[in-house]
Image (cartoon, rainbow, N blue to C red; front, side):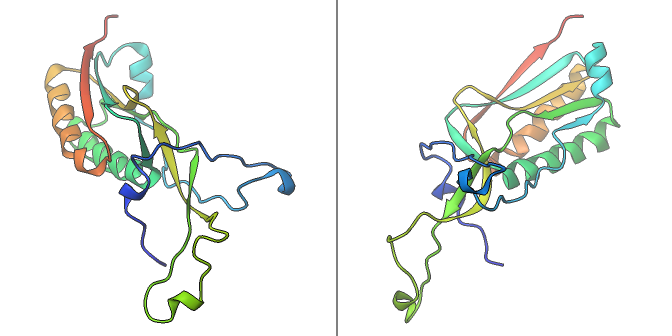
Length: 180
């Protein structure tokens, strides 16, 4: 299996959402849909969060309009969940906010000697579905984390700072203490 194209080929481009999937084959623009790599969108103790026990709330916000691929969201999810679970022992709530609906396409191009006879160039260059991405707008939420105390909130902030290189955009971490 070939590797992924660089995220910069997609991430900062203005894009029209490509999501048309229909049960009727003739009306479907997307014939095959790549499976989503994100396993869970909510982790930790959601019941404690909804009861109001987790009052320190951190939100990761995108500072620019960007496409975030599902494999980048899953890598961030795994890292954050592993660190929080190990340190806080399940006393947290973690949620991925955007859902990767947008299907990215790629016009496969061959390189090397003789490759010019095996491809059509930009003729019929619509491309095949290769990836899914979430289109995140400026000032939109990416992740939400709720914890019990201020010390746990400081730890969660440090964990979020460690995932910055995995995201294709600049982020801001907002802190809020929720009132009961």
